[in-house]
Image (cartoon, rainbow, N blue to C red; front, top):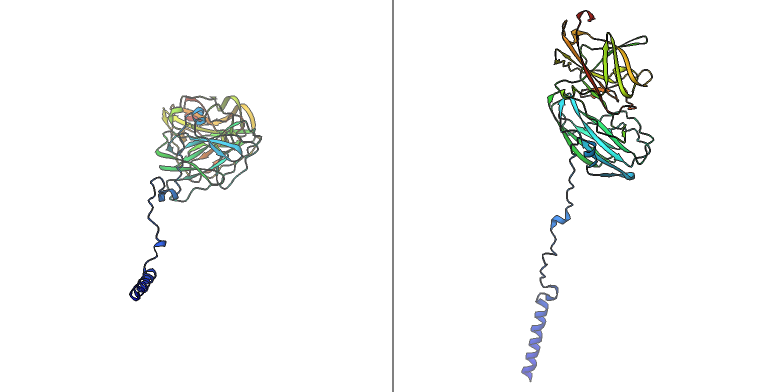
Length: 372
């Protein structure tokens, strides 16, 4: 019995030692295999990159209406488009914004460029990272009815070769889309402004010796209400045969006739011209002009504009008996010189005609004795 007692005591001591020194198996849980459907990838914790849409090229109002809808605050809906992806040097390309649901007024924003209810920025080829923030005085849009379909458009100038990267932004800074316009070649026949001379009540247009190159000036915030078509920038030689209004020359009198009323204080503020000599385009010199933003006189609605015209053949490189050609463009928002500084000339009101109007072309024989 004594041996049995000692054996029990010895086994108890051994059990106590094992209990004290052996790892606590209660803390070790059996391995559990996670089914494939329950396994989570680290990719799920990284938010997916949102793709910024590239704004499409549109050739018609119907095509613009089919573009993806973008919702803005206050139940405003827009659709965006660009007129093309290529441009001439000393030219530009149009941006479009078709808006519905707007009412009230658009406030001026002199800190950035506006395209109706949104803004846009341009990164030029000669810039690396800094965006082009240029101030521009904007008209105020008023008396908009919520049911109206409003078309806003503006011009991105391309004074040098290269890619112009455009960013469309909400007014809160959200990136809505991007576009790229590439300028590869010089406009084969750019437009230019007239010089003017005011003598008492007589107003005279002259062809300047070094007029510079200019383009129409849509301001991007004054809309076409319930549009029937897209404005098109009449650059290059392809619009020679078009005629949206008629002009005639009799002696020193220039007469312009329109189908609708146009608003004009002085003809040079709304007219651009281009010339031919013996069928060859006259290419104006490219200069760095000063702003000609003179706004004098009462802007009047009229269907006919009559003014004096003096033509200096020397400024065109024309000799006696050469054939001079002339074509005009009416620009409802005035015009701008093509330059890196985006200098502006002309009025900023778009009453009457909403689009750029191109005239017929007139050819006539140059008489040297009329040169001044």
